[in-house]
Image (spheres, rainbow, N blue to C red):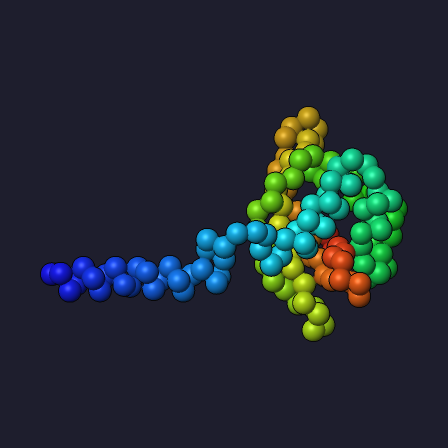
Length: 140
């Protein structure tokens, strides 16, 4: 019985050490923190009706797919982009061999006076200078 108890303790200790490099118990921001901050800043700019700064935080690909007027129309059409957004999760992604991160938020708006909750997905990527930029916006 004593040997089993020690073996169980060793297994628990080994599991804790194995999980620590993955971030369980590590302090500080995770690997996607900078990209998440850029995504949250983008949503904050949209919510505050600062389309210029939001636009500046996007990639050339985003700008070619969605012009500034289209972004303005998107914000008008999706009232959740004008409401508070709560972070849900991040997922690693890639497009054309470039590493990206998809950040998912839940946001609330009002349509015809009724509250509406939407899922907002932002794909962010690193620019040449190392900063993060929004590549894609989707509201579901």
